[in-house]
Image (cartoon, one colour):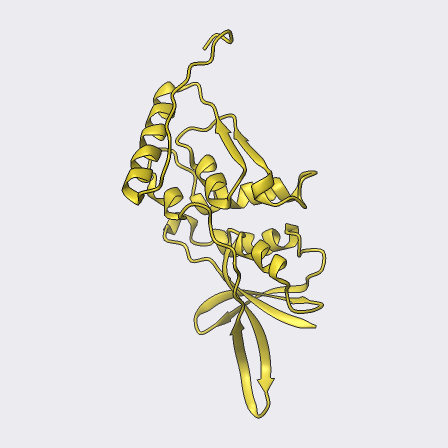
Length: 206
């Protein structure tokens, strides 16, 4: 058996200070590893909050990629009570080869009135996937659609996670325009190759 510690993601906003701690275990339980994991508990080491859980064996590379895409945890370690004559707790970092498709600050940088916390949005995107018939499919095989896109937070999370396609609609055309403008400016600033192509849908009253 392997004991894992998952670092609870830090929160910048005082409004959401307890959000990650509240949702970290439920997100792990819903994830593809949830069925194998047992003995979930919150622990504090060195003033940092962690989720402790037990797996039958050390996570595989694929499982580490799934863990890296969680919203409410940010780093993972194998926990040892003792190694040889050295008493613990001792932590060995687990490294994943997963990298976000687009920088995470794409989601954090966009500010607008009524914006939902980006980590909570990330959490909801994961929950939607885990609760669907597509739970076993990776993000790069999935399409994410937001029927009330507003300022685009959900779409940006989908881009960051590597969704094959993202799409959104909104009755407020100004929201759509400002989101497209922000995305273009972000890509230009980050020197990310892109192409913008405005189109009007015809025959649908738009």
